[in-house]
Image (tube, rainbow, N blue to C red; front, side):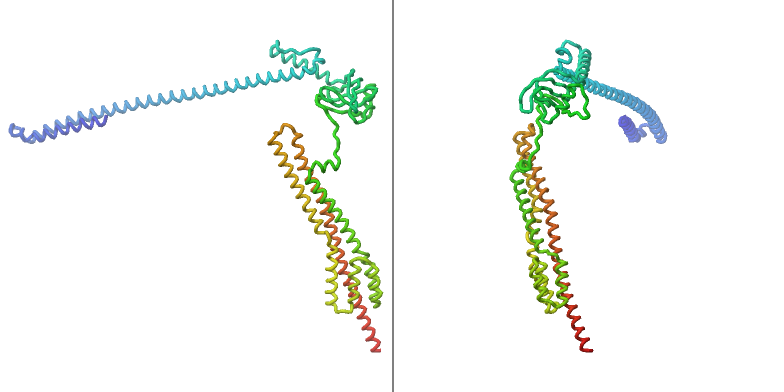
Length: 465
């Protein structure tokens, strides 16, 4: 709109300029009209035109403002309507979502109700004798079905919570089928009483009973006679549909066999380690005599310069300490440094016998748990191979690999722990024997030097006197 006003104003100015340019010709024709008057007329004309244009421009501006306000009002109105529509749409979406969720919940409740009815019917069919006939829920409404189920369930629970007695058949421990009285303690235990045998009953599968091997005839007969015992033996079970067999404890040989070849390798290493420990105990015991008694006896002879008698005493004794003491006595006449070298050499010679099999025993103690770990890995690999081939439906298929994994680990620790303890104890015993050797040799040397010093002092005193 402003561009139109600008064009109108421009055209007016152009016409005014053309009129000004035409004024000279107009002056020649009308010489009586002065130039000043022409200019004033033209100025007045232009001023009038300007006022007209200003007025028109103002009208157009006012119209533009009014149109703009009207358009903005319409826009605001449309925006309000749009927000109202959106709000209504969101409310409708929320209502639709809640409706769909409620519908799904009701469908789920309906399915749950139907499943509950079906499970209840299947469960109650097992106790048709307690409820007095066959259960028929097809012709009943939902409310009537619930009432019937709860009524029959109450009857069944009351029946199962009581002790009943009746005629029946059960199997003896040798598999013989006999007839007699069966006392049912609810639905969790039973006793059988017959001339051939009495006692606690356990499920034999398919709703049958069998006599449990543990002696309990006193409890069964007391219950049958209505007596009370201070202690009543009872076998509790969940269902009589599945056979329950007594658990037989495995022997040590069966446990090792379940671990496979690695378990046998661990057992062989354990037996070898025990044998080596016994051999080493024998060597250490033969190498260690009564150290204090021998040292005291020999020291007394050495102090009296009875060297030959002291050597004979050491020869009569057995063991590393006796040999070290004998070697020390034979070299007492040498200087102290040389004597210490001789003693150290003999101790090193005896060390090889004292340390015999010690390292190998500790190696077995370290290797045994590693073999157990190897058996664990091997068992797990076998288990996963079975799972890959047959799945996890039958746990018995997985028991072999799991047995290898657990038994080998157990055997590895059983072998390693005591062997490690025994090996370290024997190593400590060996070190103590070496220490006794050094102490005895040092004591004999000191006694001999003191005897020599006393003898020299005695000679000096006699010479001085």
